[in-house]
Amino acid sequence: MKAPGRIFTVLVWTALLAVLFFVLRDEMDTEELKKNRYWLAKTSSGDQYPIVFGGDSRVFRGLSPAVFSSNFNDIPAYNYAYWANGYGKDYLEGLYARLDSSAAFRMIVLGVSPHSLTKKTARSLHYQYELKRAKGNVRRLMAASRLEEFFAPYRVLELFDRALGRSAPHNIRIIYHDDGWVETWWLRPDTTRAERSYSTLFKDDPVDEEVVSAFLSCVSGWTKEGIHVVGYRPPASFAIRAFEEGMGEFSEAELVARFEEAGGIWIDVAPWDYLTYDGSHLEHESARRLSGDLARAISERLGKGSY
Image 1: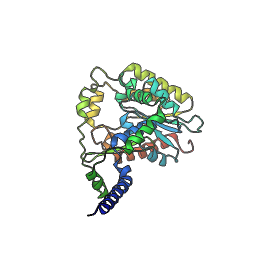
Image 2: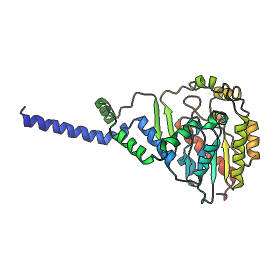
Image 3: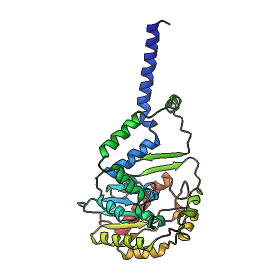
Image 4: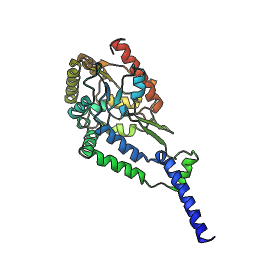
């Protein structure tokens, strides 16, 4: 082949690969990059909503604001939960700041897992980390994230796999939603997986009375402002619940009584009605179902015409 012909062939293949890359680039976005943008957007945004969800990973994986709102008169909602998160002062203030103060109807929905009421989680280390990471550097970090995404190293074989519709070989599937929900499922669920960490999770760090009291004081303050405060215990396997109530020293009945005394509304959630992928976190279809069920249960408790 003459030199001009070889050059033309190279140019054609280069153009085809470039088109293939740009067409598939969004689908090829690595989980790390998606996760990075998700947390930056969640933490740096100043957007406010009439309804906000608070809690830990069971909440950001377990509640879809879109599904909830569609069953709650289409009132906008946002999921402001974080990893291994507790109900300490800083996080509660941050959660409150995301509530639309001008809205006629305001509601905070709290997923209260026993782990969110310990001394360690009350420090909200992941929340604090994301605040520091984003503070004063939001534009730079978001731009860096997009640049990193653009130049992410993609394998040619992986490009063709995607083009042919082949699935990635890993077990985990995650979709990061703009409303704060992290839709998650495993191709091969292991409902005993979380038991390994929970067997030592509450060692020297059970549910703490000081944290609980401060949390309930905040709930009381919010309700006195006319904010509807709703609590529920996110579903988990019976083995995980046993760790929470044993080593974690958690009494749901006692917390519910005190929560309602503080003016909150408690919604009982039957854990056996929903499926987890690891024993602790809801798989995506159960998360959707819980979101709708919770919205309808709250609506029934509040009564029609109250929102």
